[in-house]
Image 1 (spheres, rainbow, N blue to C red):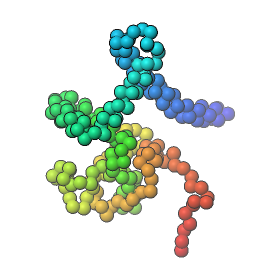
Image 2: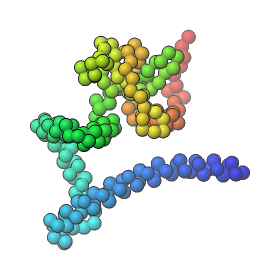
Image 3: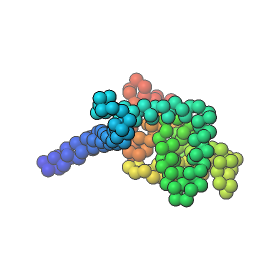
Image 4: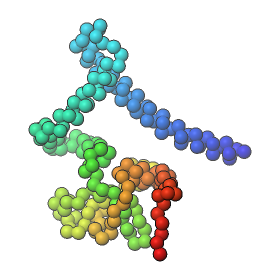
Length: 204
């Protein structure tokens, strides 16, 4: 009886926590935007034009406009110059580069994180993500004509291993970036069952 109750509680916990965290992050972003932008708008606009939520709306508009501006080549070049300055500032460059890499990791750009592959280590196969295929962008000691840099994420935590592996040790994986990341980070728990109509048939 107690075991059944405990299992039910754990199931409920793991069901509701992701929902709560997602809602909280959205709430935190909205409240932060409202506090920052709301204070500014109240100083610039008459009280009659201000209403609760205007700061959040203004924040979304600004983010959208920045996204539009980043599509312009000139703006990207100016931003790159600014980033280059940051990368030369002590301490700041370490913090900024780590945060930048983390956001690039989850960037929606198709070329932001390479491709999903299966790394073959003997009889063991591991899902990995190619992070760098251009040898010129690797440290000189890592450069090779037939090697790529592959990131292997660890389950249930932000962390993993970055390996330099030969092309012969990897093969394509028919999974999207999001599917592969969820599958790897949850140790396969999120794996979806293949419908019977689409099941692969073994051939002799």
